View 1 (spheres, chains in turn purple, red):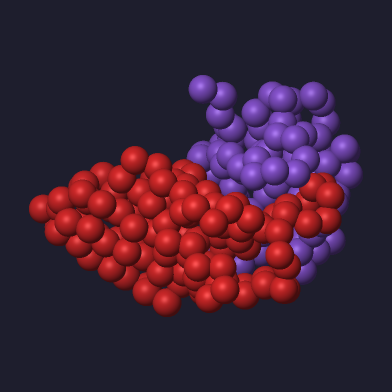
View 2: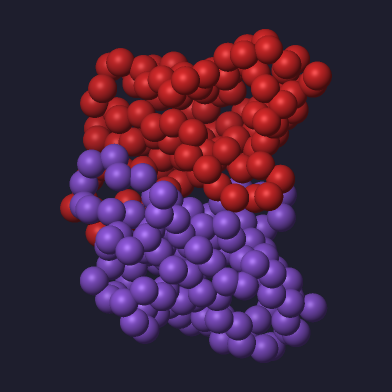
Length: 115
Length: 118
C-alpha cells in the first residue's frame, strides 16, 4: 500500500540554524500539508500546498517557514532560523483529488529538537 | 472558524470491553467531514474512521463505530471488544467540504489518551 515517507525521523539542531524536513507524498496525490505537534499538545495545521503554491497557511507559518516541491516527488519544509519553540513533531500529509472525503494520509513524522 | 473539543483527556477500558470517546465540534458549514485518528506511542497518525456530514448512517469499521449527531454537533467513537493494541491517543478532526478543495485542512481536538487494561 502506498505511504507517505518523511526524513529524517529525528533532527537535532542548534537555535538559529536552518533545517529542511523532507517528505515524499503518495505519488498520485495533488494536495500536500504540513502539521506540527508540540509534545503533549494537539496537532496544528501549518500550511497546505497545491499546484506549486501555498493555498493556505496558519498564523504559525511565519516568514521563517517556507515550503517547496523541488521535483515531482519531494515536498519540503524549511525553517530558516530555528527557535527553541520550534521543537515539535512535524507531520507531512497528502491527499488525492478535490472534493469528496479523500483522506489525508500522514507520514510517520520528523521529531525536531532545537537546543 | 471551526473548533473541535474533546472533553476527556484520558479514558481507560478493560480488555474486551467497550469504550466511547466523545467529540463535539462547532461549525456554521453544512458540508463537512469528521475523522478519528489514532496516534500510538510511535506518534504515527493513523486514520480510524470517517463520517460524511450528509450521511445519516453512522460509519462503522470493524470494531470501531461512530455516533454522529449532526444537530447536536457531536461525533463520538465507540470501540468494541477493546484490545491492548487499541491503547493510543485518539484525535477527533474536522474538515470542511466547502470551498473547492485546494485547502481542506484538518482541525484537530486536543486528544483523548486511551489506556487498555489487561
